[in-house]
Length: 347
Image (tube, rainbow, N blue to C red; front, side, top):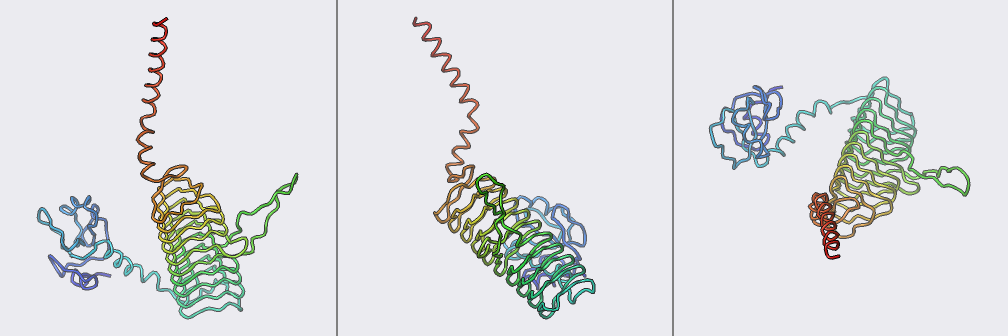
């Protein structure tokens, strides 16, 4: 489908500078722009590409002042990145607009299915499951007995949701993520092998949560593992039993959070962070990538980094010393030699 610059500007509440009738049918990165595509300029580092891009239309900020003439048609908007997101949603809509139950899907007769639901081939919906209206269940999704899924939620191919877990409205769960697998619970009686502790709780995910692909969120031993409203998770993340993640917190790829830890709201957890169990992380805490958290942080808004994690300013000061350690070692060795030589000379 093609759109003119004028149509796009109307949709984005923008201002056209150039040919209002020029048409585009796809999007491109500004450094790889080609005729018939629309791109955007949000990061000043990419400004140099604007002057030789072959994209037909480029979104720029309303106050942007080009240094030389630009051949592309510009659409001036308040925020190019947000405007791009609106366009991407528009492009994605036809893919999301699927209805009906595929003949190869299996839905238990006791399950409740809302209006305008899509269930793809080889998907399974178990006993007494409740699926809200406008839910999209793509192929090969497993929805176990007693699961509840709120309206407008999307489950991409290969997602597994085990018994009695609850997913809120307008959530997005990407491919091959597992929700409600057993928590890692074992007890070792004296002198015997480990015995498994039954995990009888569930996972509760509130509204507007997005979870990346290949994540694992364990059911609680008792009660619930909880992701509060607005949580956003990247790919390849492990959330252990009875963990609670506060509203609007962001978790980047390859993070592991151990059992019963409580993360506050509006936190940001960088990639490859490991967090020990039974800890408290206050609201608004920011954790730098590859940090190891072995104690609670109760000061709101604190920024921390390192293993074990410390305040980020202390970590930055320490990192300067880390770089100098080889030279400091050489200096100490030389000082020891000088002291030894001076003592011998004195004798």
